Image (cartoon, rainbow, N blue to C red; front, side, top):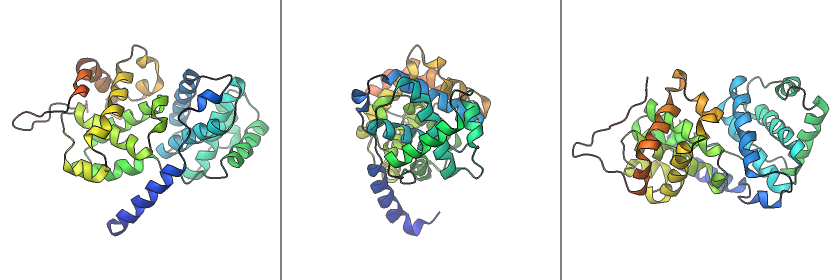
Length: 278
């Protein structure tokens, strides 16, 4: 929106995203929880997030809080959901115009935790993170910038949003900065819809195809996995509201997943071959 300051803004955001990265190996220090339990928690947070119609940034901030907290503190299995719901409670205060009350968050857990437990958890989380919450910039900021390369194509953006949320389930993306997650989402969406990663996309994303291919392969691998349909993110994006993005993407991953092993090649007329269901 303020093109005159774009370079300075994104330079600053690049500094911020590096300062709030969780440890990619924090599960090695945990004694009762495993990566599969984190996946289950994230999937549940996706449900809570959509049910209460919260902003996309709230979801991303919440999961960043969870991962950074678990990087710093050992948490018992019985307290893992409390960490998740408290992280969403904190994130909502930063992003929502009208954040759900603490009583609503108690209801979200089906009274699994009390109001006092959530408020105490909030204090512990904020103290552990040294109150650094707003430093986090979600991938959406970079998606908005990268989308200038294709004039904000609705199919690409919708598919990209779905693919980015898929990365939330996969611990391998903990080492990826939000800017890279945005670029991976856009890159895979482009590939699925028959587009290429040309100079404009490289300019706006600051990532080359070579840099994005490993992450792209992880995403496609997850989409094609046998249990993927059981995850809420798949059900969420299978609706018309989201152009049935998950149905399209999963079908593509099963049929064309091996195409990620080589660069995309358009036909002689540069035709785009894929479209989502409107």
